[in-house]
Image 1 (cartoon, one colour):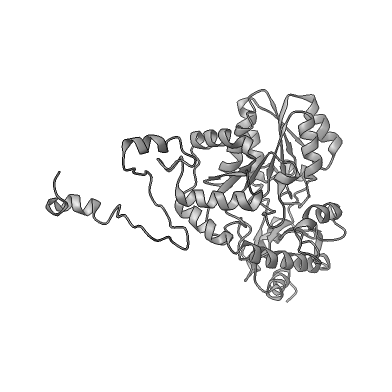
Image 2 (cartoon, rainbow, N blue to C red; image 1 turned 30 degrees about the vertical axis):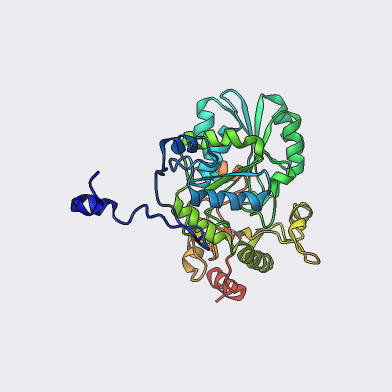
Length: 408
């Protein structure tokens, strides 16, 4: 073998500084393993690595940075036995989770009619188009859910913990009981309710997904998702996520892992801000309706208090999340655009769960792929806006909303 000192400059430029062994210390934070492949001392060790869990052979199969994030998320969601699989986006996680249930063309997927617009589009454009029997129902009507599950060969019941954007709260224990009575699995999108607020697996969900883009990373600089489940789903999820190829990247995993450390602090402030914003909007003459489960008049207020209450510290009132939506009275698209253009602090952006307060227009963004008739059918009018409370001082947020509504 040619000694290192005698190699050509072209070769040295490629290999110098790489694969240096460092022993006797550990890092205080997880490093970023920006590598697509991994090396082992012997071919026998490499062969054994293919069967390991996690498997650090090829980054689509596993990566130490991603594995650290998965361990953290599994621990937060359910602890011992819970498995987590990080994905490239929330939609990648949802797609893989549905496939992991084993549902086949001709079998039924029952889903909430009040879903994130892209989720509804996934079901209609992809699953329905490939021969799956997709039915949308009001998940608050448990008799209708029971009928939809019983009429066809139902394998999946798909719900959001809190619906996007109308903030309807799903009775997860009831939905789990209905799904399991018909031999179906409950798949839950818990993006609006991070593990500091709710643990859907403990309430009967079979598979849980989050868009880690949102509260879990929390800083608006990551695209990612995760699937969480009990150990009985481990082998299937490992196979499906490897085959569909929607793996998370190490940089995104590291940013999410870093953001996760401040989730309890961020989310506590965001929930407190959302409660004050909702009360202020509810009293404003320009606002026709406010959808926030923390308001006593919300139809799911008691259910939300029951589901979210266990997350509250002793002696504290339960939080109700940091998302809300509101309708400007008699507003059309032009009126909503004027409101968005007048915002100076709150950001008119399509995401949620950031440090910043974000205001989205569902008809333009999350539910853009639905026709006006479809939006009207699920209660999304032209004047509806969705707000994700940030961590700014609430008085500054309210002043900005007041100015945009024309109070000044």
